[in-house]
Length: 224
Length: 122
Image (tube, rainbow over all chains, first blue to last red; front, side):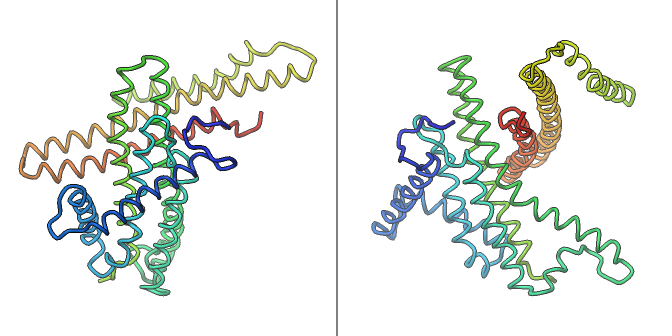
């Protein structure tokens, strides 16, 4: 798979990297346009962006609480919009899909892992380890606590793995199905799969963001 | 119910035990050259890989189908009991379906690795 079919190809740089740069350029340009032409009463494009951002922020605030939603919303919003744009770019002919490569998805999942543990340690300091130990914390329950610790560590390591593989698997399976069906039964049936592809792209971006929010809320939640 | 489940499991076990003998029988001719031995190993690996990948995707799709069907059924029941909550129920349903689907996607990723990445460098 040396030479991909993408339109924009820079020498020496894989096409999924150049298309991730294209996604970044699209997002930054849209943000700059939005900032410079902001009006008090939103219309059109501004209305759409405001709805999207407000829905995302409400989702954050529901699960994280007001203070942490303010701190963590830039990360969550960036991940969500970047993954959404990358997923949708894969549907256009001639464009390569950055998230159809495990490198891009792992690069989206690794910060989530690091940020959960960083903020968990920052809020709870050393009693963050109590999260790993399970519901019963007393001296007679030490075997249970040890077992729960092992299971929780495995679960925590599985989180960035599943985040990246879920997104990657969905995108690559969408491309494979489109490719195979285009060989078998061109023109009508692949169009239906393209519709399914739009749904899958949006849903997978949303699921990534939702899981990020849930993991972060599990890490920074004040115990009561 | 228990008897049919047991029969299915025993049949699959029988298949996996007999398969290497079958494929070795039809692919193994006694050629002295090294390339023939490597070709034999290639055919053996790929025949086993093809069988494993077919079974893996079939079982994964079966499990995901059952799980999603159960979830969907309960969601329809919830909407029929309380049509006003249909927006929230639909959102929760879509999220749940995506999570269950991702388990079948993990199986697909393993299958793709076995078929295209040649993990044992045969």
